[in-house]
Length: 293
Ligand SMILES: [Zn+2]
Image (cartoon, rainbow, N blue to C red; front, side):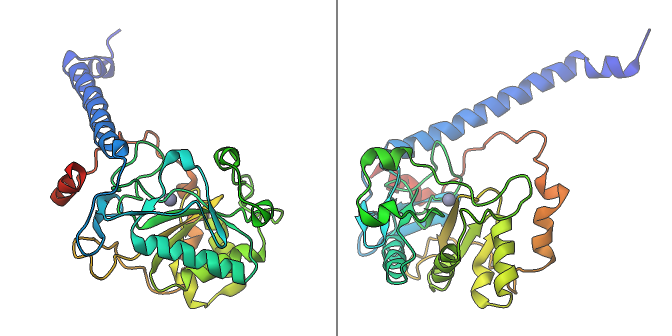
């Protein structure tokens, strides 16, 4: 029996093309890992002249003049020390220390800080596409009472996990994990002028909208996939960093509208059939200098 489709699908030309495409995918993945590996292996920040410089975009960039966030400070403690992703632009360090202080003053509990960036920023081998210019930080939703009374041990910082604050079946907020204190922390962060935007799970954005529609700070709170156990703060490019590339501006309004409904649609919830192979991000030429310094 002759089936024309059969012949088309298995023609030698098609097979060759398919194999070539698979190899191409494999090599671009390898290239992405090789690039990320160079940045991951650097142990010290690059020195910058007068001021620290974030260079490029949040997803393809680097940083010179990074500073390390101290392990502990008033109102915060740093987690996952072994990852060594506690470097950032000095304005990011200042932001975290400031938010910790404010959380302490408002008695909101201790902030547990996840990843900032690598000593010179750049792509990471695991975990993030962004966090490359030292202006992004992940902060856990878990406001621990234990951490409020003592300094966490190294092991606790490695093994503790932040529980999800969203029920994955129903998309509802889990009020055994979520309190008004979490809302207050988000509000304090969003009100800081240096903050560009904050990514949270769509269910959290919906919760904030149901309580606070019309509050201007909600505009900075953006729904994004996952982010149900931590929120991700992104700072604006510092004014003096001329090579730092800003993200497109936020849409007008507080985002408590139809654009939020989309996140609960079947389309938003259906993962792409096969993720495209990771391509190595193309970093600005200046980053080569930062890496080789
Ligand atoms: Zn993040």
